[in-house]
Amino acid sequence: MATRERPLSPHLQVYRWQIQMATSILHRATGIFLAFGALVIAAGLLTLMMGPQAWACFSGIAAAWYGQLFLFAWTWAFAYHLCNGIRHIVQDFGHGFSIPAFVRSSWLSVFGSLVITVLVWAYVLAGGGV
Image (tube, rainbow, N blue to C red; front, side, top):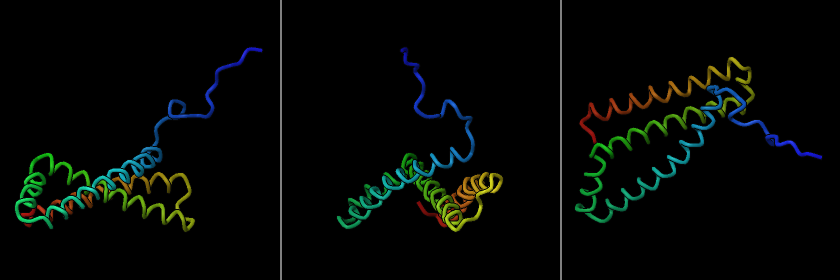
């Protein structure tokens, strides 16, 4: 008997992309990025403990364009993970499982995270921070 090569399960090449798929993948990716950012925060606290010279070095890196880009991305990742986590908590209570509600809450978590990020950075930059 000849064996037919078939996929074991449907995968990304079978389904067309939807916002629900993207938000699920983004939630995992932002979780990983937040863990890395926590290490950077720990490094910053260590340099603060080590004295003014070490802190000046860390502050200089954070103030550079690549440090600013990292901080902006980390802020967005935090805001997105927060919004999407709240969405999941609401779903844990049994709300928002209809397809339109699911799509709406997915988009809301994306746009909400962008609004939060812009508001945080507007506040920081208006105060002369970073």
